Image (cartoon, rainbow, N blue to C red; front, side, top):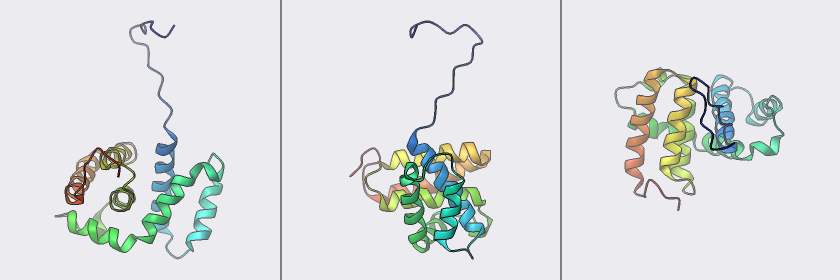
Length: 158
């Protein structure tokens, strides 16, 4: 029954990640891969990557939007990260953190349909899951500075 108490010591079943979360994970993984394979064309790399995913390609539409948007605005995004990541040399940022930051920066700068607080929380959660302990503070610091420059409410989409 839904209202029954769990026996002490029983584990609570893990919630299945949302479709958006799964798409963000796929986009982050691709951006990490892209950074290591800059010589390959985006189309070839993306087709190969999508072939490795569990679900059909149209399931990952949001991931592809994030990928194309991030890569299409990479120069602007990297300049923004460099300006906000004080005391960090750009080439010293862990690749997984860079992939997360780039994707989150794209969302903050170009996806006003997503509330900034959602983007920041998702990025920090990805950092917790895929990077190290220091990552959370670093990602939060950079994204918090960026969000303060947005000039829009943190909890609302436009």
